[in-house]
Image 1 (spheres, helix red, strand yellow):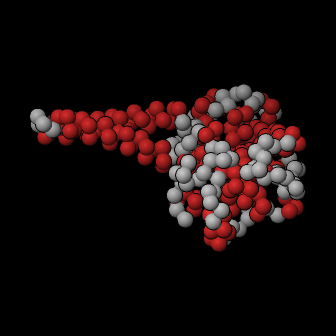
Image 2 (cartoon, rainbow, N blue to C red):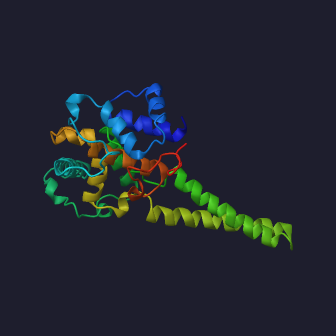
Image 3 (cartoon, rainbow, N blue to C red):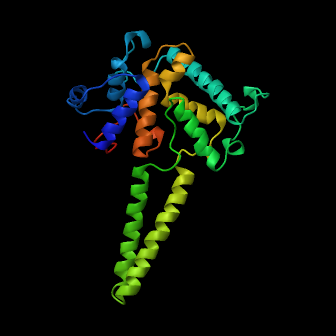
Length: 259
């Protein structure tokens, strides 16, 4: 079991309060190929019967959830929005304001900036929530470093025929410039930074990452769609891939490159 799987196991156990042994994962791995959908089904079956809806078709058999399932998701999203609005009111220390003073279309950048961002996300984590990344994932930074290294080596190889020292300096400078530029561009385009999100978008993301927490607030039992959204978000954050690219039929190792 590689580091990607270990991080995923930890996230699943922490969110759903279930214990998944190494033997359980070995049994799942024996069902080759292991897909994102079969992983979500596996996690769903591990939930206590009192916390999940019975007799739901598996994602591998039918990836189209029923309308009742989507209604439950909407209830959870609304519960997450109300909870986040209340936390923002507390964080901004505005006891005389209503939670409705933080509408879902409001930009978070207008509420929290600089060090306040990390402080607010720390508040969310202290409440027991999993939160979106504030920076790029390790995989994203590794990809940027790889492209930067290739560019630096190309410049070094081109100039090495003339002068080794200038080639080394030119290659090193090209690598540094490409890496810093890649981090800035990557953070702007791909990282789940709150500065580019609205209150509603952050609430939806929190609901997807913490379905059990907000499911209890909304007084609804979990279904396969909530578990699937959680697994999909976890895989996207872990691998640095767009959420839309994680499909139920996506193979974890062959398609997504998990180790």
